[in-house]
Length: 220
Image (cartoon, rainbow, N blue to C red; front, side, top):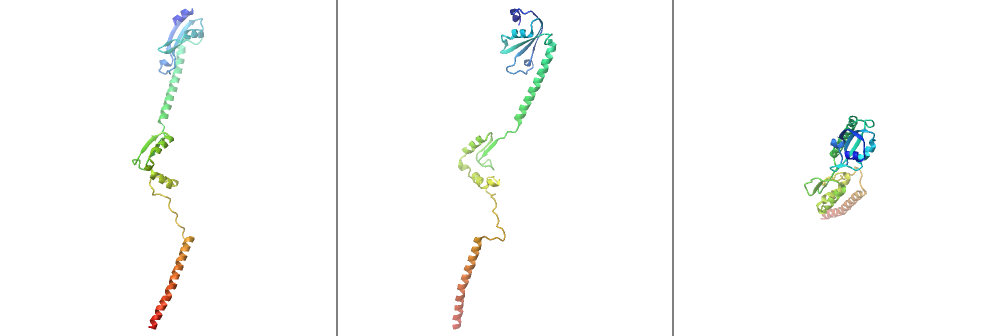
């Protein structure tokens, strides 16, 4: 900095110098500068001095150094300037902590995963895959299971899917509807009528034979 003062013939009096900013409080980001505040007295403007001090892009250890000249008559003394910087850094720290807490909370939220199994009720029977992130991956895993390993599940799916009874056991099919009392189908009526006719024909054939037998006995 002294070389710049000599090079440009700057006539100023240095009052105090302080290093401030996020890198002094562990709040820096990758692109953060190292802030150096210089209080001075003189007729040179703060803007002109700022341009002169920072035109070469001075760095320390790969970190850009940002030299900020201030005067009592414009920005204020170093004692007046630094509390404002500290207040800004306190707000930045609080914002960073709040963001970190939100990210931690998001990480704790329940993640929805999928499961693929040959046997939906007894997972130890056959292949079993859990913690699957997406539907496409689950479908791909299911399709890799040999078809002969999953007939029961497919049969049950076809037979019971409309009754919300999928449990790999074909024991809960929809109950058959009971016939309403007092109502007989036409088919049953025809069967009953046929049976009556057959019984009547059989009786008619048996009566003459009995009569003939009795007549023969009288004749004897």
